Amino acid sequence: MVAALFNLAIPDTGARYPHQERNPAKLLIDFSRCFVTLWKDKLGQISLAVTTLFWGAGACLQFIVIKWAERALHLPLEQGAMLSGVSAIGIALGAVIAARHIPLKRATQVLPVGILMGVAVISMISLRWMPAIYVVLILIGAIAGFFVVPMNALLQHRGHVLMSAGHSIAVQNFNENVSILVMLALYSLMIRYDMRIQSVVLIFGLFISGAMYLIMRWNAKNHRLDPHLDRLIGEVKH
Image 1: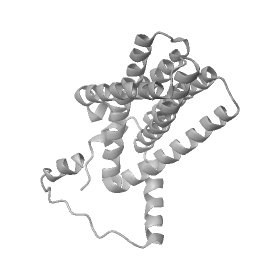
Image 2: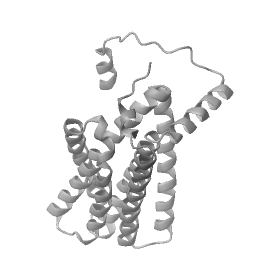
Image 3: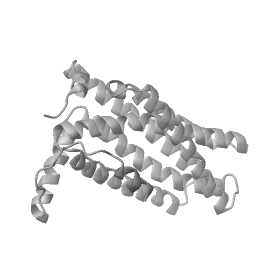
Image 4: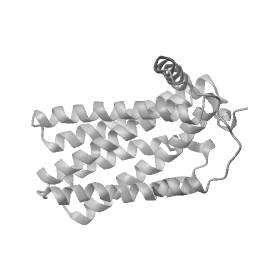
């Protein structure tokens, strides 16, 4: 409701979209075209991969923190749930820092920060002192907010250039929700087979760092193939 009120104050830019399809079959074809287009774009695919990883990992991390608080720290459910909220403070801080200091043209330079998120998650295993736990959870959130905000901005920019902001958001949401479902399913399997929560945290942290390293290599390869790739960030849709 607050977001809706803010939208009322946004001035009319004069931009008008053409008539949008309502036929489900044509919508599916249009969505498939946008999906392939965004994943084929050398900047779009990197930002889409990062945001897809982030939202899947973020959803999974909430459950991991609650289970870790229960088994490792022996905290009741309500206190464990509060720990998940602590990382949200860090996300807000990281987002503000990124918005102030990372321009769109330098968006891909924040990728190495994603590796640190996995390292910070792994450090949870040895923590028992609550002040240190709060600091690490805020740090995890700050790292996540810092690297996902530029990636999200880059993704929306490429979506605007290649299709439209609305179409790119639809593709982004589809990928992110699939990521959430898959990662929560894998986490549920580990819990079902009664894996030690320390092992779950370790696997999760290594997965984040490993995935971000592969994305960095992927981005470096794209830049080798096209040394002027970052110039695309300055493009606007005509």
